[in-house]
Image (cartoon, rainbow, N blue to C red; front, top):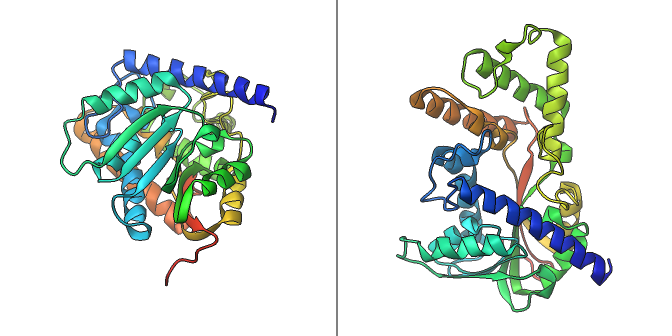
Length: 328
C-alpha cells in the first residue's frame, strides 16, 4: 500500500469513528464499564444497559486479565492498538497494568482522556496514556500488544502482527479479541431468528412481528434468517449504510489466526460468544424479566459455543514471540 493510500484510509477510518463516538456521547453514552448508564440510543447492542455490558464486554475483559496474569504476570507494559473510547485500556490500568493506548480517531481519544480524568477508581491503578497515533508510527518496547477488535480493520494482518512482534520484549505477548464471522452459518442464524421471533411474539423484543400476518409462513422465516446471517457477518443492519467504518472486516478471522500462528507460540485460543452482542440490547419488558432473559440467553450462548451447538462470532488468542517457548 502506498503512503498516500494509507493516509486516505486512515482519514476515512478516523472520520467514521469520530462521527460515531460524537453521536453516542451526545446521546448520553458513558464509555466506562464501571460507570456506564442505561442509554436507549442503542436499540439492539449490549451497550444499551450496564447489565448487558458486563455480560458481554465485562466478561471479555475478565478473560483478558486472567490471560495476562497467567502468561505475563503483573504490572505489564501494554500497547492497546485501536483503543477507541478507551474503556478496555481503563480496566487494564485499574488492574495495575501500564497502558499506552493509541487510536487514529482524535474524538475517541478526547473522550477517553475525559473519562480517565473523571475516574474515581484509583486504588491499585497502574498508568494510562492515550495518544492519537497510527500503529505504523508507534515506537517503544512492550510486554504485551493488545488488539481488541482492531486487527480486523487492517487488510494485511500478517504485516501488522510482524510489526507488533517488533515492539515486544523477548518474552512478549500478543493478545487479541477479534471477529471470525466467516465461521458463522445459516444454522446459527436460524437459532437467533427463532429466539428473536419468540421474544417478539411474547412482547419482549424491540420489533413486533405481530404487525404482519405473514410472520408464521416458512418463506418469511427463511428470509428473516438470511437477513440475520447477513447482519452478523457484515456487522450491520439492512437499513445501515457502510458498516462500522470503511475498513471494517478488511481481514477475516482465518487471516488473523494464520498471521498470529505464523509468528507466535500459541498459548491459548478461546472461542467467544455467538450472538448476544447483537441481541441483549433488543430485549424489552419489565426489568426483572429482562434481567432474567439476559442472564439465561448469555448462559445459553456460552454453553452452545462450548459444546459446538453454535459457532462463535469471535475468538480470544494469546501467544508469545516465536523465538521463546512457553515453560511447561
